[in-house]
Image (cartoon, rainbow, N blue to C red; front, side, top):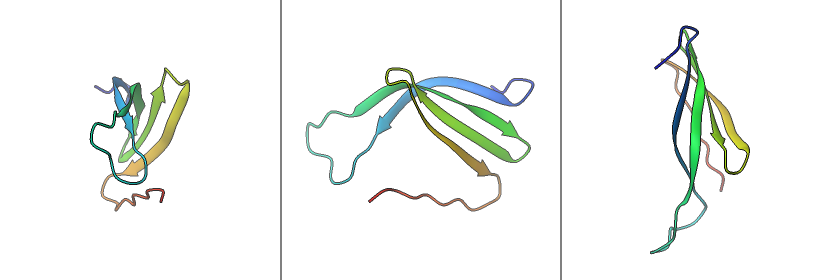
Length: 74
């Protein structure tokens, strides 16, 4: 749900990936997370806060109708 200013916050989980294959029986690097941001017209901003580490992933932005680019570290 967006508030009256277009902001949102949602609890969830974040799973950090790593390079290379995932090994059988390997535990996920899973963290409780708070996803928050703002939708303003066609623009979305998003940040992911990991309370257990005290870190923030992002911010990220996207614009409706524009092609996005996803880059992954090698």
